[in-house]
Amino acid sequence: MILCGMLCVPRNLKNIKYRKKNNFVFFRKDFFSSENKHFKIGIIGGGPSALYCCKFFLKNEKIKVDIFDKLPNPYGLIRYGVAPDHISVKNIYKTFNPVIINNRYRFFGNVNIGIDIKIEELRNYYNAIIFCCGASEPFFPQIPYVKKIDSKENENFPDIFHARDLIYFYNNYYDDIRCKKIDNYLNSFENFSNSVIIGNGNVSLDIARILIKPIDELNKTDINHNYLNSIKRHRINHVYIIGRRGYKQTSFTNAELRELFSLGNVKVILNKNNYDMCSYFNGHNNNGNLDEDHENSNMRNRQNKLFLNMVQNYQELEKNKDLYNKYKIIEFIFCHQIKNIYPINDHIKNVEFEINKNFKNNNTNSGYKKSISTPLLIYATGFKKNTFSENLYNQSIQKYKEDILKNNFGIFRAGWFSTGPKGNIASQIITSKNIALTISNFLEKATTFFDNDITHLLNKKKIQFIPFDHWNYIQNLEQKGITPKQYPGKFSTINEILGILNERK
Image: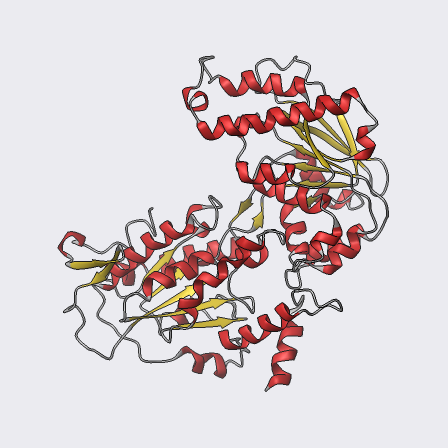
């Protein structure tokens, strides 16, 4: 991992003497000149990578860590990116309990670094800061019709949403404009029956599952009840998942695919012609030779069996078309790309697609009609880093270049803000451990200790920050149930949370 170019890496790393414990590198015992002084690290963002970094730092008794998040709560992606019905994944937050109870860790929620507190102010309180801001901004492919949708001349074009909009909506993200927009949109008409999702990743599978899963089952999760009320107005029974490449180029995990098969009263299907077309495309490389990686992959072989099951389901339905009315359908379409989108009325849009132009045999009959009419088109085409955070990071690196070279101040980044949106939550463990080691080596050269407390600055600026014990109180209220049926839920506005905390004082 390359972090801040070579600026953040101290010289003569080979000369560091250290001992290992639990596979983590500690400073040598005689490194510190004072028993009572600590190095201080500030982390911007409170998601998984930040908490994993913190977990590793706290193994060293001479390091203190403060985490800042613009939201009232920690956990980031765990709280707002994981599907509500994946309860075991959401419960990963409990693994950070050893961090939370450590008196060398503090959380400052509702503090927006770069706006409430400037980097030059953090410079006076910390030896190093880490940007753990994630990568949650929606990425749309550079296709002409997407630009038309956003242009002023086409303000009345039927709404097209990114996966992030729906995910934040059903996960009850605070005060998000796009969440309100999709809520208003779903409530502006009734009884739509299908949806088209563009993208071949696990996010597409999550959305398809949440759209089609029985409301009674979702009602027992912490899902946004405004989403459930909106979706009750409709009868979604067919979800299309369209991808421009073949099924072996997808990033689906087998576990996520198998989960679709476990849904009650749902058939997952794949047209036989499309499967055959993809099989050639997937099994050969650009030279037309068999791709050994695909041929020898046990995981891919197991996945192939799942797609063959989809083909069998498709053939079963085609033999008895009445079954289409009996089951809800999740249908995969591979090796196709969107050609055009045009409105039919205020809500319905016609999605035209064609065989991927990069596919050699693009005259092959894929077995599909060339358009689908739907009111709900969702792009699950990936995410990117927040522009404000990226600019703040780059500007800070330039501004403090000399301090970084002299080991007076370190600026690092970790998690998806460093690597881009790759991997899952568990994959952050290794990357966070690596950056924690890099910063530990950086601190070996540091000579400054900070005894001042940033809470004084926050209070002076009258910033109503939320420490972890206050957030824990809010979280306990949520888990007891904030809805009439007392199912777990989430507060939907920051002002609502601040109001509750003010009443508690």
